[in-house]
Length: 230
Image (cartoon, rainbow, N blue to C red; front, side, top):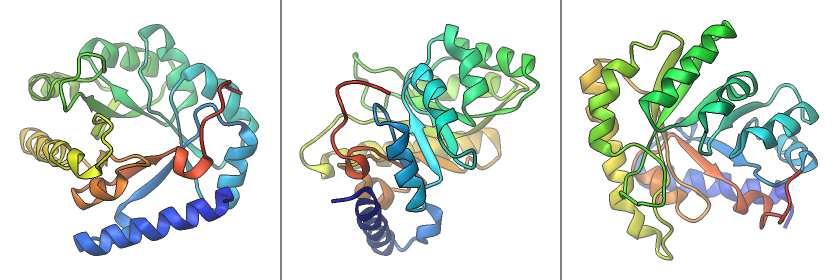
């Protein structure tokens, strides 16, 4: 199947999931995750109406983004090392993977140097996996107030990558937990957090049913990832 037909199928499934959850499909943004896929594939997805793209690595995004239409929007969704913060602030409109106060401080410092405001999401290790990055849920609440004082960062919400499961229903409790945590954060801040980034190719429909506002789809749009990057 073509990228265009894949996108049409995913949009239909998003609509069906929203109908089951009695939600407006306009509430759910579709991000195409273009990790390891060439700029040509991004352009095909853009021609099919996708405007939001996610990259896992700063260096790959730095090379790829200039080869793509300037009208597209790019988020960093992979783990970010502090020494890549300057390029991340320069290349991406949002960083979805803020997983510590130290990283947030460095992003804030680089955004200050570039005279920019940077929207961010706080990445939560919702299942407590030792091999994954992300805040522990209780640490998010502990750090929230001081994160909110960083003048160049705008906290827009939360992001998580639950463990893969053959049955997407097994991820439902974790999506529900993240949605509940977002509500706790909103109560603590006294302000809404508009973005709940959860759900990928294998489980995005369950994520939407549990309140996701942004699904990150790679394989179901582009097919299997090539072994080499751009």
